[in-house]
Image 1 (cartoon, one colour):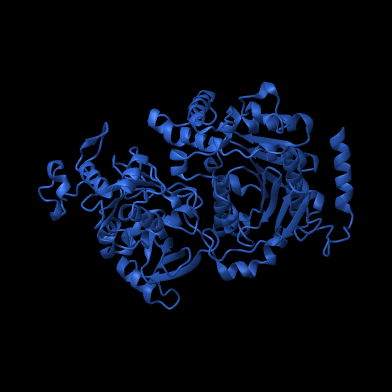
Image 2 (tube, each protein chain N blue to C red):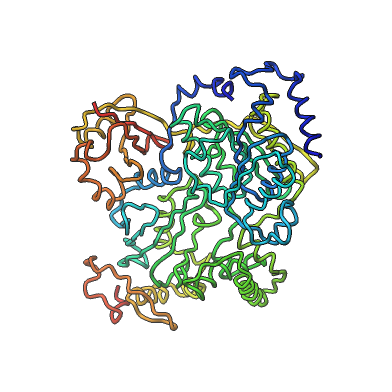
Length: 194
Length: 421
């Protein structure tokens, strides 16, 4: 055994490697520290000492969902980046790719996840869903069908549900970002003007 | 007694010069014969399942005298077809203890110790006591943990912490055995990207356009279970849970004309089970035990360093040296040292990391023992850690602490040891 050790000892000396902390935590530290700052996206930590659980808040600047504030919980396991983070929407929203329980249909969160992807890739993916909902691959079938059949009515439905109205026996969450001046005076009564 | 006959063969084998060994020594540089080395070796077997049972039997029959086995699992009835150290009466008992008892009964000259524990529960001293570690695990998570831990032992203890890992793995008719010489050769994490992630289906397919029985099972387990039982965690080993899923998935499948939903398929999908083949386990366990034997006795050259075996299209195996990944999260971390006054501020340390030609970092994020020192991003963590920039280093950590530094210019991390002048 000593012989095996000595065989390559000089090489070891040259490299002097020393991992501290678990590989998944090192990788998460790298992913978080290199996130691209963005005015419309916040990342909140319920417990800043534990970075494995956090909330991503996204305020889409344009599109059907402009004026809303959408919240997603991220859970990063010890098996990251072999496994993707677990992402759920905490609000009840009307969206072709997000069901009313908060499941998100995003390829990089399931079948297309690769360890080379990172937290930023997932955030980009979520942002895309709000800027360009994809009715071809629906999770909420009714929402997708309406979006294809009648974009105007779909837009109105989105605007109303974002104000917290109930539709088809589903009580939607009021997701309006009240810090946004464009939302001043916005309620479900005048939802269709927005 | 069969074990005596085996041992006589091994004794003979260890006294003869093998034809392919260049530097065979009857007495090694520590003044020990191969037989003495074998008698004194203390081996840790991680996992007492399909591979573990084979490995334990092989080690005991090849003359190892001091074996420890650790496994956190209990015996399930479905294990009995291949985990041959267990009998029907053992169902529900800890695997490690039953396996150890069996070996003790059959090979009374072997000193075997069982640990019904998680590997993470054992202390550093525990692991330091072994000559080498043989893994027969089925989880990537456990392998990553033991690999990172053992690589760390070398850094903190040098040769005393040098514990070669022989890692076996099987998946149906395929398997592999590899030898990891921590910090010398490729580690487990270096090859992590080779493992295909768990088979998953797009959630929209599951929800709207199922075509396979698996889609219906995933619909029941991923979507329906959390909706109906929001506070209950799905347990793949609980028959009530699986039966509920079978019922839901079958109802779901009918309108789509999908058939073939069974109890075993449902449990297989939920637990991501790939059928275990006893003969694959036997072949891989034999290869692992062989490596353990050669490493300990130096009686033959050891594996360099990856043996791949495939038995599903004919029988074929291939051995190749798996290369170290320079960007590996465990062994690819760069190391550096900085000497600074303990009165210097964290900001001055960051400036040093940016300007020192040995580092030239752009926007470093720093932690020490998983405590946040400074995060460049996201905004909330930056604001929370910003006050640390003004603080003296000696108020944040002690001299000779090792900081984990990440930066866009680094593939993984830089481990910086800061010494106060």
